[in-house]
Length: 460
Figure 1 (tube, rainbow, N blue to C red):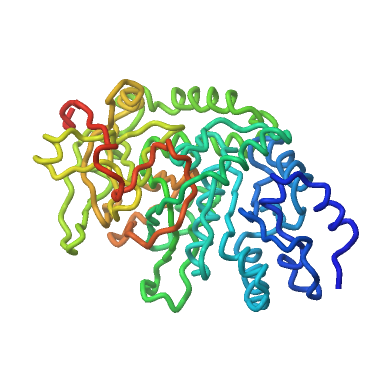
Figure 2 (figure 1 turned 180 degrees about the vertical axis):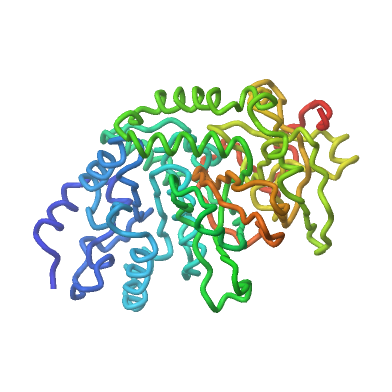
């Protein structure tokens, strides 16, 4: 058997560089008969490309066209057309069917993934790879196509929307083939609360949860009769409070008027304006003290030994961020790097991405957040933990604003129940691709590479 003339001709006409990434159709399409590969030499760095065509205005759609021009169009997937779980299940079933084919086996062993989109899209892909428990799961590189782009920035891929022309794509591929692999912690979120009564819900804004947060199966042991239980995961951060409120306002506006949000600079300017109109810069005047984190929820943390303790939250804190990566709000680092004295006195460490600990940081308002722009600036360091639990106080608020890896939502809270809670726990790791000068650090790297800051008191 032979491949189609079009496929063979395309492969022959590719540069030696692009052949390093090319995957033949017979490896990707289980419905076709076994055919002879185009080359006796397996690709050096075979890739699967997942792109959110709606990200970055028109950039996502343009990027799909460029990748499909340069590679086999069957190895480039539009996430608006096919979900990553179905694609990866299909391809890995095919690779299993071809387990006696040495060429296909070498592709499986060297396989990498590129995902292009916002942080929500990247987190979705990472979650799928984690959940599928693939044999020899591929490492993942992220292309920044969103507004914040914290995941790509953390691993050295930049935070600006990239070019979509041939030269830009080939430049990115060159970085991929030379990238290093790093582990990244996965964090599971469990949310349980009684369904609000219909007349108490805000019907003007129907509940739309992030991609990676879904209703638990009936067989899930965490389910409780009369309650809604949701499970999900995140890789960068979960936040609760006013920062999520501003993000929710931004996403709501973008959904109503998508034509106004096709430029990254315009998006960031709009976000800043909404921070003002939502009262984030003047929170003491516009934000009810009853919705400060300490009044809204009881917070507990658990260390690796399994012991739970109450976490003191200063009364002025209006936003709390549970952070896994050293990048938030477009590349800022809320945790910073505690100096040796802080490490000794409070057992604080640098924010490693693979140590099984999550950094918990608080903010009073947007002005407090602006300290991150200063050298050694950081938020209020509250704790590092293996697990954290928010138990919402009865009748404290009708709803709470939450955000997870760039995707915000307005969560209704039951007014007559004390069992509303969100719990975050460590849930394994996934392989990432990173440039050699990325800001993310591994706990296994030499301590000499970690720079300590001469920071101020966290209580301020």
